[in-house]
Length: 91
Image 1 (cartoon, rainbow, N blue to C red):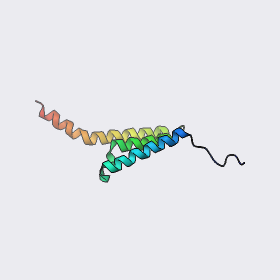
Image 2 (image 1 turned 45 degrees about the vertical axis):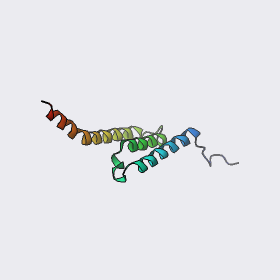
Image 3 (image 1 turned 135 degrees about the horizontal axis):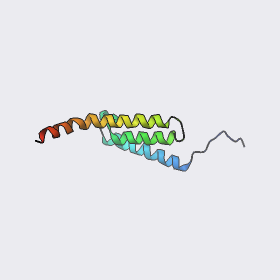
């Protein structure tokens, strides 16, 4: 039997990947497709998938940094106008 030709994938990883796929499919079903790019649940599921694939890699820190910046940008873009409106109405 040849060794090294087939790498066994741990069961935990398979279960996690299936969880990510189920979560993304649920969001595709529940949300309009045009809003998925800014849906936090979908973005966190994609980050989860990246964490499974990139575990132990050097590229993990830049991925985490880029993801955090993207989430902060989305948050500020969506919430900042609301916060300014509320703060202006309080006198």
